Length: 402
Ligand SMILES: Cc1cc2nc3c(=O)[nH]c(=O)nc-3n(C[C@H](O)[C@H](O)[C@H](O)COP(=O)(O)OP(=O)(O)OC[C@H]3O[C@@H](n4cnc5c(N)ncnc54)[C@H](O)[C@@H]3O)c2cc1C
Picture 1: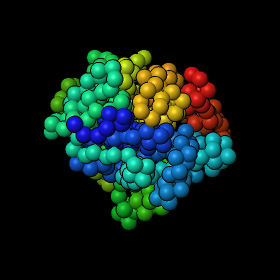
Picture 2 (picture 1 turned 120 degrees about the vertical axis):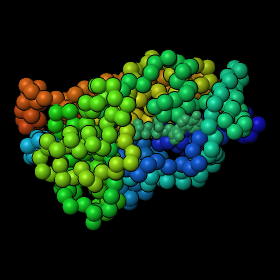
Picture 3 (picture 1 turned 90 degrees about the vertical axis):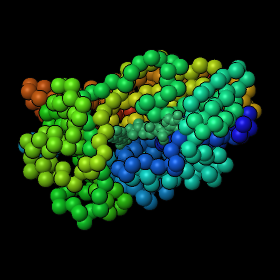
Picture 4 (picture 1 turned 135 degrees about the vertical axis):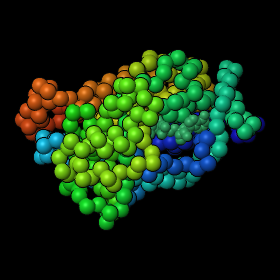
């Protein structure tokens, strides 16, 4: 048996798990993160962090470092993937005054590096090659058994083990839901890029059944692209659905800019887009879910990681309010966390689906969308206030007695 029985154990060392390691350690308790891979890291691509997440990263003292390696874009733009040209935009330049933190785009591996270093500095124990297979809650603590025979005992377990979470089976027998869409993504050095959008913007080129998102990374030295399309082969039940041939066929119908951008996408990896339906319960006794394990969503709002960061922040607040360093009160902390995070993330999951439908619509719906977007002012925050606004993550509610 490794570790001490007063530790909080976090299963999964992605953005959600590492941020939880940090917030839990800052709440004054020993923490250990168990990651099944050989190292903490992610396949290279960009990530968008909205102010609901960067506000928390600022509170954690990480925003300066993030700003150094990230880019602060000027606008979020929706453009027409078929005909070219802008449909609408959201001005991001006043986000610090409006929401207390900027909109940032950055490389995922840079974010993971910053989180790992912050965890190490906070004394979080980090274990790699620790594939958690069994969890046993005996009422006084939880034993975690790993595939290599190692075991850990902790006061509680937070499972941040992602979309295909094994721990989720404690709460639901649901399956991941395939949307039939697939993503190709990749960041390449800027000197390889022959065609790019305005480098001060995040641009989503949207069209019937597809879209392409583009933005710069690392002070404009890299260019990030994510291309997503609805696979016809998925509908026909073909096993190799969403392959690169389909990618090229689908984007061949787009405007010059979009069509000529896609050859730079990495072809070796592809990400089928899955989510799940919101569930009401993520906590039983001393075990709780967090991040994609709890609320996997389609990526159209660019909020999956942001919500995992909100989860971690709120859980840290709940631990501070309800639990002592030795673990007493940890069950109450998990329940308080669940009470505020379930409704918030369910709304984000559902809205992400609707957002995807809005991006990919055709026919009359497309005409109406374009008309609506063209009439919107760049400083109209109607659709994002609930998502980005201060106090929306639930941490204040927990500290004030939720
Ligand atoms: C194409 C695409 C674009 C996206 N863009 C954005 C964006 O711009 N902004 C945004 O906020 N979100 C975005 N997301 C969503 C975001 O990537 C996820 O929501 C986020 O990574 C979830 O973090 P997590 O820590 O919960 O899970 P994961 O990142 O999946 O991490 C889970 C970790 O747990 C480990 N693990 C799994 N099982 C075990 C086990 N048994 N034992 C130990 N370890 C285990 C895994 O190895 C992994 O490291 C995007 C997603 C996609 C697919």
